[in-house]
Image 1 (tube, one colour):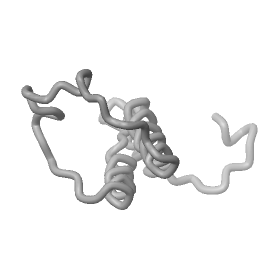
Image 2: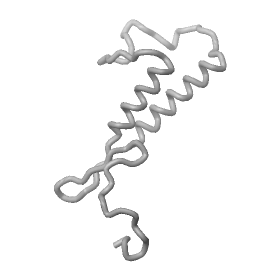
Image 3: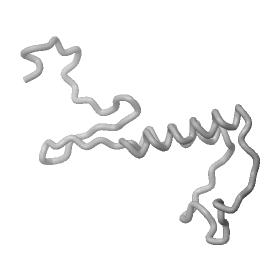
Length: 94
């Protein structure tokens, strides 16, 4: 056991760490959940871009973003875009 090697601060099993939820199933296997992280990420994203609607399809069938000829993003928009991508990437890796 790890307690034999290291001094352990508490004997409680972890249930939350680094915005992830942890629990054990009936067989003793650990389960990691990103539910809390995703809720916090959605709140952060809504602060940056406004309310986010819940949708079944991420984009309309009639929309073709590959044909858009919009201008480049301004510095503030680039920061928001990179932040949103970072939230999504970390959430998908959990």
